[in-house]
Image 1 (cartoon, one colour):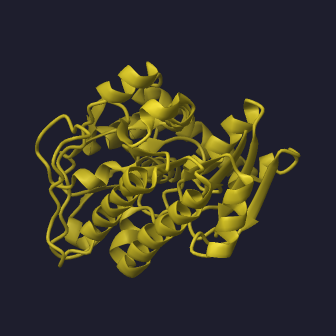
Image 2: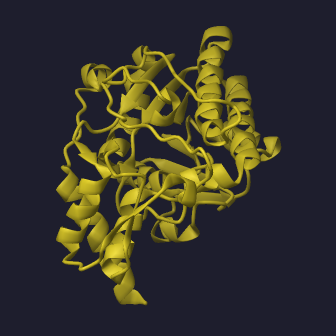
Amino acid sequence: MRFLITGGAGFIGSHLAEALLAQGDRVHVLDDLSTGSIENVRHLKADSRFAYTIDSCARERVVAELVDEADVVYHLAAAVGVELIVESPVRTIETNVHCTEVVLAQAAKKRKPVLVASTSEVYGKSTTFPFREDGDLVLGATTMGRWSYACSKAIDEFLALAYYKERKLPTVVARLFNTVGPRQTGRYGMVIPSFVAQALAGRPIRVYGDGTQTRCFCHVDDVVRALAGLMAHGGDAHGEVFNVGSQEEVSILALAERVRELTGSASEIRLIPYEEAYEQGFEDMPRRYPDIAKIGAALDWAPTRSLDEILGDVIAFHQAAAALV
């Protein structure tokens, strides 16, 4: 099989490329390196079945050529990270919506199956737990740039499902819940790599808000297994939305304490008001807890890595990177 991965030099995309190559497939990565890094795929370049193009998904001619050469498309390219979203709302909206339009339009010409990666952010401020794929989405006011990301990814989902319904394009939507693992950067506010880097450096571990907000973290290897399984599943998955995440819930304050313990750090844990970290009036969700029964029934899928195992992998990666400097 020949796979195209947009955003394939990013954290998740690079792990997906690695897994597809390991099972004997061919992989072409398209990435503009705005948030991804060539370092993420450098170890794959020696494989003759791997190729990459440094360019934007917004360029129709580039996407058209690469889609034409692929059997399956994974559309992972997106603006990521709360800090980037708050600071660059125009870039967020344009990247997420326009690039998805281009990829779906080109894939539809040749009926190439597409998986669109979405996010748990689309559930917004919903308080109906666990989050189900058919549940209501509750977003904040348009005056808060923080919600532009959630809205843009919801539009991506609407586009993918509309292409399936109207133009018979085989599409699948995967809503990812806090994917974590080696190669993830804390540059855009991702919490676990940020905490680990701070703890290992002996700097204060910065917890935004009061730390009572909870999240569920899923190892990238488990997420990749789900993404691969959804596209291998065939017609039963087409036109459907699937939550992909863990159900091991932890408060952000407890997470900081666990990182400090596992790293043996003496770092203090410092609470930072949201207004200082992001913008005045910033809103956060108190919980993001997924119902994963749907993907469990479809693929017999469930996460295999515990939070401590995830933290161990991230800590080991950061320690190894520091040793090379």
